[in-house]
Image (cartoon, rainbow, N blue to C red):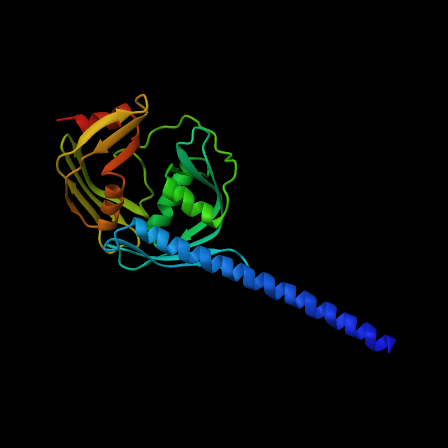
Amino acid sequence: LKEYSTQGKQKLKEYSTQGKQKLKEYSTQGKNILIEKTLLNGINALTNHTYIKINSFDIDDKSNEIKINMYLNGEDKNLTVNIKKFKWGVTKDKNYIVFEDFDLNMDIPWMQYLIDDIAKRDRGYIKFPHDVALFSLLYSIKPNIKSTYEYFEKEALVITEYKFDDKFVKIRKLEIAKNKIIANIWLKGSRKNLEVIIGNYKVTTANKKKVIVLKDMDFRHCSKSWIQSIIYMQYNEVHLRYSKKLFELFTRE
């Protein structure tokens, strides 16, 4: 009787442990499904589906790895993004959202190169202008941390002089003058070059002459319309780090 009692207790303990594990798994799955649907709907609500659409947003229940598949008008195929890990926070002045300690892979080579290059020039960080919608979407995945990002003086990127790795990006043509921007850029992983023609635009400076602002741009042509749609989402403005050379390019006759 004692033996049966002991065996019964052991079995009960095993079932209890298994039940807790299953409950934990179901709880995680339920939480992730809710996050996935929230993010899928939330991101798609911010974009024009003619140009950008999130097809799927999946979070692995065990590893928390994130996989995103999206349509980008002008690309040869859908873009797949794998995020194995990331942390995010807000800069001290609250002007930027910062990604750090991340492992992010994209299956369109030129996009992966540009992300890696941006992070390399900013000591392993990627910054985005602070946006309430972006903050909310990120917070639904995981809480923000106290960012370790520290400002430092770095040279502004002057696109006409910057040495891009020509295995990924080759500038075939770039003309910049007052009221005219014409570009033709080869990008690895895209059959079509990025071709842009901008007619009239306005240029000014902001943040005590630390930023160049291009605004009210008249797009005559853009072969990758998903890029143009992102600019329109930012009130048809592009913000660039100020440099005298770059400002002179945008204002010369």
